[in-house]
Image (cartoon, rainbow, N blue to C red; front, side, top):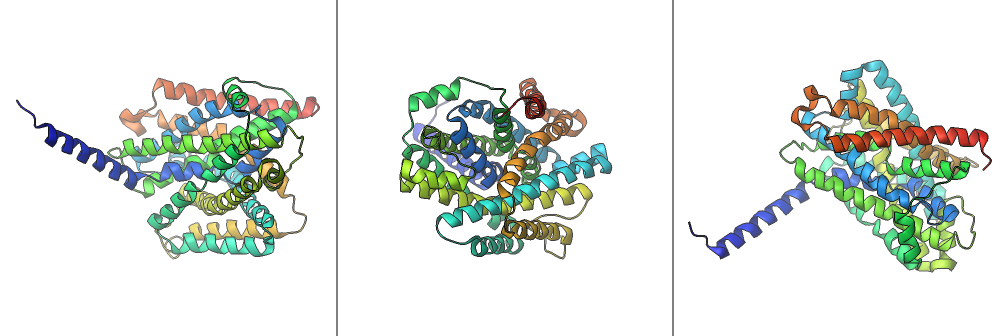
Length: 423
């Protein structure tokens, strides 16, 4: 048998181009879901981590990225195999009562997270002299129009565009001119402290890196996009890219604040404080990029978070849900979405609202809720009846159960530290 080399090369190029086009068509659920994870609350948490502890929490990004990929891959795989969302599967397997309790806890945490998004939008606008009473209502209106008037495909394309803007934080980190040797050592050499403030920050960092709502939104997005096991290889790549990109951005935020604010003992309470403080220490371009990144992240996440919440609450209770449905077809879905946006917007505009505490505590709540959601996921993904040949490998189970155990231990440590150990 003889082969024509030019023909083989053309066929190879054609196959590679075909796979790339297919990936572009499938791409979205993983990258969008994980980009939203770097929301206003997350940016605040990473900024505080760098400002208060320097590079001391950089090492958490490596295990967090591995755990994030494993957890998100499980959610995407369940969506592709079963064609059902996570809330739907929990209701079918464990009953309505268990599902309602889980949804109520997540609803409270996500409402706090949505407030954090509008708080971040207000803070970012104030850096550029835009009053929150102007920017927050405009942002809420833009979010409402985008989701209520858009289709799944158009909304996803806008979300992917917003994801690309997170490169602003990578540039800000580079402009901070850190000691790259010290950064590298802190990234690969773990360190830990049982001080209450360190443990609380540790739980918050992990809690904002892997959040409960992400699993529900990603699995529902895979189902809504019609991805099956035939296309699943592309979705797995989408999830991997999203995991790496998300935590690289988080890593650079910690680096930027650790390189500038920590050595000068600059006390910050918000991401806005961090952006303003970066100006004289790292240059006005770094500060401007940091602030613009926060505005983008806040608007982006204020669109997705309430959407995810409305989706999994309706899914768990059997109501119609999805951006491609009309308000008449899915009134509960759109009603809950609008209520979350309006409620969060109104509370953020109240004078003297404890926004910083809400933003930080919402991230801690994510860390506390996460083990319960992961246990549900692990039981479901290892069910042969449900998943067939697509159950977890031993390696995935080991990483996922270690993540659950770590979050339980950290939560207990946080409670003990708060009660017994002075900050």
